[in-house]
Length: 351
Ligand SMILES: [Zn+2]
Image (cartoon, rainbow, N blue to C red; front, side, top):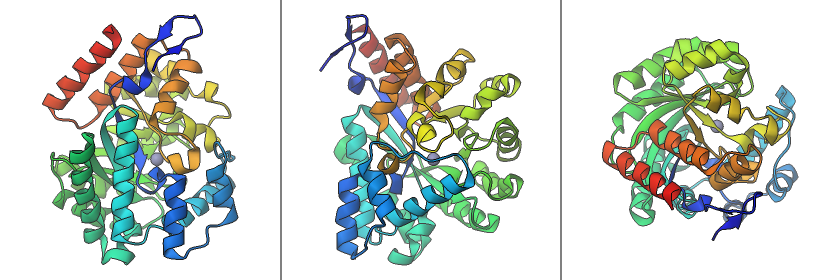
């Protein structure tokens, strides 16, 4: 299906643009229907705030600790319905299908197995359920899936080391295997440098390093994450745009930015989509991969982020193709897949 652009010419279908999805959380990938199904199955009453947030087009919260607290409460309530192997497998399969429907050719999904461990017998089975379901879902949908094990700033750095060792034991390039290690949750929590040892364990095994940074906190925090965790990619990283020298360094170091416009607006990082500094980052030469972060709460999936880039930021089809190439380049796809996907981006633009 093609749509008319503002200039009256026929615009290319963004759904058909091959892209890689590099910022999606396991629980947050859930759709509203599944949330309600799983709540019924588990006999869990969903809090009013969560039901309202999911029913709304998009959540809107202030970028302060109160806002984050409300977000985290909703997120925890959503996570509380995922309490069986079947529920976990369902989430992976649905995330893969949703990605396939939107032209994603590769999905790198983040999961913190700690949250599901109590229901399935520990962090190892929790991770293995996800990797096994991801392997199956890759075969069914054709979307290559890699798993990123995410540690949390709200827990002890020793827990992060345990997770890094678990990630290393499941590392591999095959479908569903662990390709990376991350760090999530409120950037104001924890001391970044204390997570350094966990990231070194992951780095020694050749895992991709993809901590969050530069979302709620500004350039100083981004610099700290870069210095102590040596990321290959930054979850968000958008606040680096406030410091041109830092941004130049990120570009020079080849650190990819997982930019999630809808998430930024929902969590009050920027008050409107126009304010997300997408153009500024692109102009500086940043390698960007658009991502949905938590579609359950932010009300939109991957395709909508590309639509925002087109309609709100005025990116041309050539620029959108370059954005898709950036997502593919920043991914851990094999050279063969990468070459095939990039050729298909060229074909999309040539059509
Ligand atoms: Zn995130």
